[in-house]
Image (tube, rainbow, N blue to C red; front, side, top):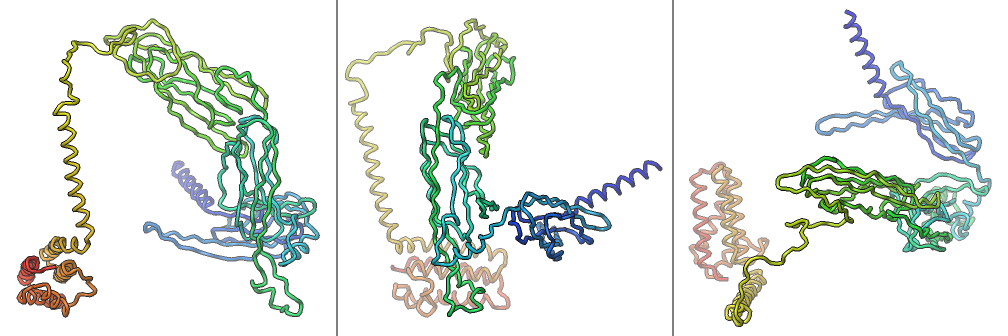
Length: 607
C-alpha cells in the first residue's frame, strides 16, 4: 500500500515537473538606450496566462502597457503535426537616468501556477542635447556630413609587443547618421604579419556609447589576430570605407507640403568615404639566447609526452604522443626534436590541431603522434623530450622537459638482442634486410658478360621496336581523323543512327504490348515512326506532318507501296489510341508491320 502511494506521488511530481518545463516565459529589450528615450519591454509566453506583474522599476517610467497579442502556427514534419502558440505582452518604458541597470524577472500565472521570466540588462547612456538638432541638419542634402558624425577607428589591443606575439586589431564604426550600407572597403596591407580572422558575423551588432557629450551608435566591423614577423617600428596603414548615407532632401518653403514628411522621395542616398588613422607598433625582437628545444613558440604553453604501451614484442607498433597546449602562436610551432633508439623504425608525425581564435588570442592544443616499431629485443629508453618557448609576459624563454620513457621489447623468433644502446636524431628509416652490417653489397651472384656488338641498342629488333609503334600511331591517327570528319557532319550521323534509335523505341513499345497498355503502346509506336522519319529525312519534327511526309518520301525515291503502308500505320495508331478497345492480336500485327516498314525504308530511302 505504501509503495503504491509513493508511486502515485512520484508520477504526480514528475507530471508537474514536465509541465513546468514546457512553459516558456521570456523577456527581451534593447541592450542600450539613451536617457529620455522610449523603448519596448516585451514578454513572450508559449501558453495562455493571466495576471502579469512587473518588478519594481525605479529607474524607468512605464508609459504604456501591457499591449497583448496572440499568434499560432502549425507545421507538419514527417506526418507529425506540431502547433506553436505565442502570447506577447508589450510595455513602453522611458529611461530616466544614465547607468547600467538590470530589470528583475516578471511573473505571470499559468494554470494556477506562478511562472517567472528571465532578467534583462540595459545600458542607459547619456543623452546629447544637440544630437537630434545636428542630426536633422546634417541629414539634409547639401548641408554635408561632419567628421564627428561618422568615423571609424582601428585599435590594437597592444602597441608594444614581441615578434610572434599576438595582438587583437579591432575596426569599429561610430555613427550619428542613418547608414544604408557599405559600398567599398579598402583594408591595409598586412604583409609583415600573419593574420587570423575571428569568426565572421552575419551582421554588425550595434550598441550606444556617449563620447565627449555626443551619443553614437557603435558597431564592431572587423576583428583580426595579428602575429608580427618583423622586428622594429611597424605601421599599419589606414582602413578606408565608403558608406551609403540616407539624407533628407531640402525643400523650399514655397514648395513644401504638409504631406512631404510622409513620402520616401524626401530622402536620398549619398556616399561618404571615411578613413581611420594609421597605427604604429613597436615590435621587439626575441632574445638571441634560444635554449635547446625552442621551436618558435611565443605565448604561454604546456607540453606532455606519453607512449601507449611500455612493454611490447618485436615488430609491435607503439604510439608516442606529444601534446602542446596553451595560448599563443600554436599554429606556427615547429615539430619537436625527438631522439629514437637506433633499433627502432619511426615514421613522420601525424599532426592534429584543436585551435580557435579568440579576442584573447589563439587557444587550444597541437598534437603530434609518432608510430615507432622496435626491430630488436631489449630495454630501450627514449630520452626526455625538450620543449622551449618565449613567454612575453615574463620577457624570457621557458623550458619544459618530459620524463625519459623506457620500453621493454620482448625477444621474437630468430631475433637477436641489441646491445648497442645507440640513439639518433629523428629520421625516417627504410627497411633494410641486414641490420647492423657495415657492408651492403650492390649485387651478389654470378655475373654474365656479353661480347661487343651483341647489345640490344642498335640491333634490328631495336629498330623494329621503334618502327612498329610509330606505324600504329599513324594508322590510329588516320582512323581518328576520319571519325572526327564523320562526326562533324551532324546530319549524316543522325541519319546513320536513325534506324538504331527507332528499333530502341520500338523495344519500349514491345514492353507495353506485353503488359497490355494500349494507349502507351500506340503512342510509343507513333513516337518511334515520327522520330525515325525526322532523323532519316534530317527535318525537325515541327516541320513534319502527314501531308508533307508522303511527298518528301517520294522525292527520296521511296516506293508508293511503302509510303502507303506508313500512312496506314500513322492512321491506325492515331485512331486506336482513342478507340474503345483493341485486341492483342491487332497490336502485335501493327508492331510487326512497323518493324517491316522501317526495314523497307532503310533500304529504299536515299539521303
